[in-house]
Amino acid sequence: MDKGQLREHVDLIREVFSYNRRFKDSLFVIKIDSSIIDHNYFTILVRDLSLLHQNGIRFVIIPGAHDRIDEILKQYQIPYDSVDGIRISSDEAITFIKMAAFDVSNKVMTQLSGYDIPSVIGNWVKARGLGVVHGIDFQNTGRVDKIKSDAIQTLLGEGHIPIFPCIGWNANGDPYNISSDELAKVIAIELGASKLFFIGSDGVLTQENCNIPEEMPLSEDGRISKLSLSQASLLIEANPENPQMSRIKTALSACEGGVNRVHIVDGRSDGALLKEIFSNLGIGTMIYTNIYERIRNMRQKDISSVLSLMKPFIDRGILVSRTRKDLEEKLDDFVVYSMDGIIHGCAALHRFSNDLAEIAALAVDQRYVHLKIGGKLVSYLLEKAEEEGLKRVFVLTTQTSDWFQNLGFESAGIADLPPEKRDMYNRDRNSRILMYRF
Image 1 (cartoon, rainbow, N blue to C red):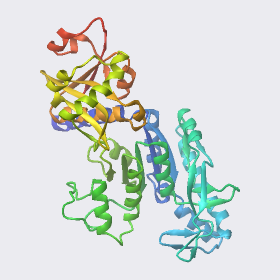
Image 2 (image 1 turned 90 degrees about the horizontal axis):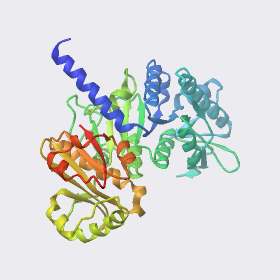
Image 3 (image 1 turned 120 degrees about the vertical axis):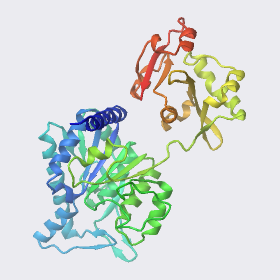
Image 4 (image 1 turned 90 degrees about the vertical axis):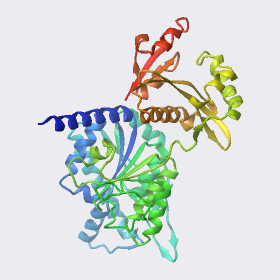
């Protein structure tokens, strides 16, 4: 191995460790098409899932059962039909559809057990019938009404992987056949998943299989590697007859529901999931929300609101006291999280010499903590620091060290501070020093 190849391997290892730290304790929802479950690479996919699970990433799996349902209905000579890609589930067929859905789920659970990963198949989905649409009676085909989120969170907390068959039940215990793509989307939204994956066999999106608007960038291999929400909408409009757009629509809906990242991946290659997660370029198509769209630079007129936001934290000793003059002098360092014209969070990035910066003055309106504004502000400033070529970012904290460590910060000492900050360190306050290294 020459020096160039060795350097590439080292860079890859660094990239993997960086992403692994970022995603620890995150929840990924994985929809696996039935074509992949029957593929030779399925065992490799399960091995990779088990590896990620052992490294602290939590999973929910939704196995697709389309091909298996077709197979069983044909085997028992049960007639079936679909309209606009939606299966009509007759009274005669629903028993066999349920059999196929649980058969596929059992196959996934069996594979996971081979890697000592505990998994559970359950009936956590309440459903209701689609009814009659444009004169078509879909009979026992349904849609998700709600999922039992508390039960799922308990299982995840115990280290289990919940497996969802594409079956839901109404209040009377009657089963409905539901779209596994739709189910995966609802689960990702309801559980607050960091990522939603659709692993299939449709191939990647390229200019060869879809009409790509001119302004849409392509990766070097001619693939659409990522789409913002507006770009995804444009792509859907440009390809009204393309069946691959159905999944793009589902991904778009998931992002609009609060999922930050949706990945569409061709699972017919070794390590497809790992390549998509642990590579900046990935191998599929990522549809993403701009989690920073409400973050902007602080303005002079924001200072009064920011001071009011900081006051409760200053009173509790979490933040050091700052005056209006302090904020005016460091105006360019501050960013705010603004929603409907109201400031709900603030933070600052103070630059020092030696490629160092400090994240300071982080405050969030406690009525909006469920929006994870603090994490978004820190992530935004870290990305900003990295773009500026800084190597390290530190924080001084008295009561939130655990929270920062969950974001990838590590313990450091006074000697790690820049000289000007070291000389000003308040030993009476005795703040803990944490460092983030790029």
